[in-house]
Image (cartoon, rainbow, N blue to C red; front, side, top):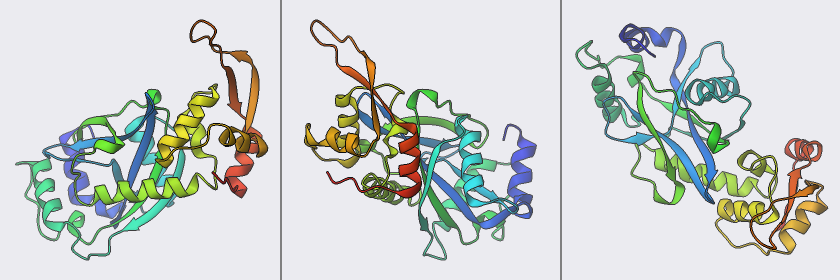
Length: 260
């Protein structure tokens, strides 16, 4: 939202176009310098950081809403996107903090009433997205004033229950790595075996056997060896590999069992 009028219209009348008590929050994960990072945003008028998110339009499917929200915020489409959990057991989930943040957002433009549609019971559907770190260009506006990539192991105290969301997203990703080859979204098109090995160790948070791990990927038909090498120094030219896109897509659709 780029103008004051757009913000005021959304705050006062957005409930006519959106599902009033249902939001989407997205854990957007990228991989850079062998570190797993997460994208956080800062809302206008707030001192805290949180996950990017938004509301679902009344005529919109959940997955379509998640893709739209991420495209509007990051400029990226066709992301690997997975729903992982629903948050909102408490009827009064962070109502007071939301009311304070909302009034900070609109400042003196309007006064937020207790019956404002944004202050009712709020249930959040969590999605995670795996993205190419270099492709993300966050769009700031009158709602989101700043953003940053944070190491997953050094997160600040986040707004609302977003730390719980990040923990649940990581738990889900680590389980799904055994059944879906989701790592392709975090690597360049061509990579070395040590690079994919370090990526999976980073995602899983544990050490993997350097000989058995690639053998399992080859046995599943997920990797193609290329007739190219990467020169990284004297007498060091490791082979390059790529994901077999046909087998990769089939594995995403049907699932695999990757025992590590």
